[in-house]
Length: 308
Length: 260
Image 1 (tube, one colour):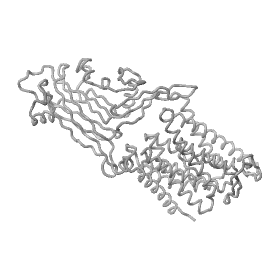
Image 2 (cartoon, chains in turn blue, brown):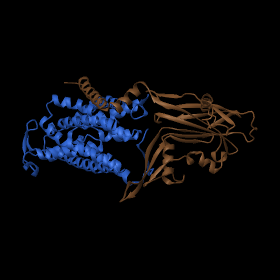
Image 3 (cartoon, helix red, strand yellow):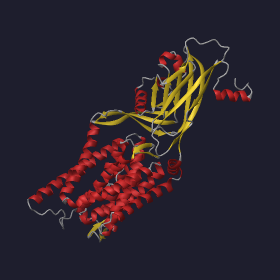
């Protein structure tokens, strides 16, 4: 069934977009991530303009992270204090990111920077997760204990001043690194058009040593707020949010996410991390290959203004 | 020359497209639809333009028969064409050209290859065929159209053609009788909304003998128009409404699928 999108200005197959939303929703429900890094490239692939894709995906992520966040809230696994401190940094980062986004777009190097950040971050994070997942699986096979969090194993980060007690996470931590991480995530999110949970979750677990129980819920709450802000900002500055596209994506996404979450419960934690690591790594490698090989067409056209 | 005529005759001449005494032929044309509406089921459309050549009985009969070139140009916009180059092992955008006020849609139809219809200087002057249509580029601080073989211009035309937005058909115009003609205007689904100008030129023996213009528009109506207007003119409300829609969808989903 073809449907004409009012903002993207092209007809799409409703079932194809629903299926894409559901597939990405399944993955995001399974791993507790937003899935923007998968959905945005998919939409661009079916011919939707990158600006419309990024803007509409942020709306979709807002919806899926709310339904996720609500269920984590009921399980009391969101740390509101931690989310607020992260958010403080993230707002500043988003503003910086949007500024750089505009600057790069004017110089025609936005695509390159997006591709490079995808390559560096996805291969880095994906590689580290694969390595860690494999090690955990090997450790589990040998029958050793597979705990990731070693209590008392503090790094220099835990010695920073301005400490604050995050009750729900049962951790006493300086607000400086939390703010900086929030800033980094907001900055990357604005540039790459992703929620950033796939970077945030590992940082919170491995660097700040925050218990896994509150990490996913808190990261979802943060994603929810930043994506709502991003939706409104994109609508006001670029007029590129396609509500119809977003709604189709959402319906597919929230449905897929439920099944994904069920599937996620059945898979063991270390296998899940290995799978997610492989997925992230694969997307990163795809972007790397694309940069390295000669493109099919070395020319591209983009609208730069005027009356269209 | 029009100014000297009575107003009624001038209007008639404009409507019918007669261009004054220089041309003995008058063109009368009509488009099947002057207002293409974009609705949720829109997936492109094909318009038909038909018309006839009205000849002044006093003029001598044309020997070679008529040739016709129909140029349809969509709303104009600025576009940037970029070229990638290999730098430090990766492909990056290196060089770029800005095309200023170029048609977003361009279709040239004729009854036979344009090269056979008119000599090169006429083709250039009358902008016949995509190669001869002015596509203004900004080169540094200069504004100019370059030769048709310019790599950026060629790439630009090629990319637009691949999307069906630029097209050239040497057999697009059919003469049903020596004076009665028809042509199709194919509009792919991706065509932008706005006003489309149709320029019809009649030649005989390589000389322009008749010229007329008409237009049609592509507009969004109903729900599509409502969304597009809201997004552009009430962007804050639209953004807030979209965000609320997202939150509602998420909330409903969490209720529907609630298991605890």
